[in-house]
Image (cartoon, rainbow, N blue to C red; front, side, top):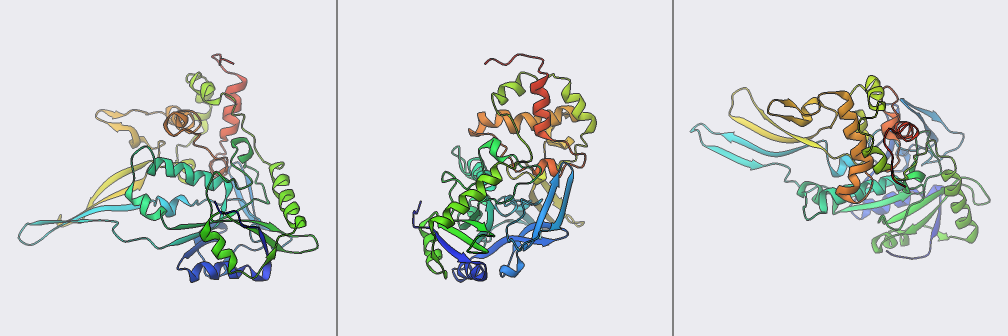
Length: 382
């Protein structure tokens, strides 16, 4: 990674960062307010950013409210993640057309080259989520071409968190709130709102191209006071986590208690709606669907997001392998927090808290794991 000295830009100059990225041919994807939520969409200027908004989050609860300042990144995370730009919800794989003579012509889908994108406002937990999806789609000797072509031209502007949400537990997962060198980024920034310098941003480069972008911005060198205040911001955020997950021997704990009565208790509340997997930045399961028009002369095959919570996900000859909500919730939690380690070398959870916030009945995986730990039916070796 590039190790150029950090710089400081003022609030009035922040738009120059977006302009510098656009000048290099990037479509800038960043946070904006739409439908009473903060979502990631293409933005044109800093006027599109959610200035002065904070997201209030708890189990089954999400609300936007005004802050008492003009922070651009004073929110936590919304219902959508960067996953949808790298692993889209729907991808056309192939289409087939039958002509008047009965000959069938096949055409590959998803052949367009995606635009060069700059992700603006990526949190540390989300960088870890992208790294997990990289291992899923690009690692283990197998490359998903649909993911690879979207991933290759991404410029990442990461943000050190100055706000912790009610459902955040990134500290427990060692994924935040400060951006870490082991998760690559091009630029990392910390937003500072008070002090002698007023509203300003400390930026550091994490790559050669990141350093080139910083060189184009109206800036001054970061002083020791700026760097100290930036460190204070993330330290304070780390101390305000809304949730905590004890990860000590957690995979062993879960796999040793597959018949624990707690699975029945959570199943009584779980709607198996799949919200948790849809908002999760690391879940990657898909299904393949074939569709035709009414004439039967045109057919398409699509890959779409699926979930281990749907009845059809494990459908085989004779029916579904997991017919109960109990078995499907258990599969999700044990995969996410236990067997993911065996597959990909890490937990499948980054502590963003989305699954807790967007569960309609407020099921909290940190609470479920704690309940199993407190009343485990089988011993876990020390």
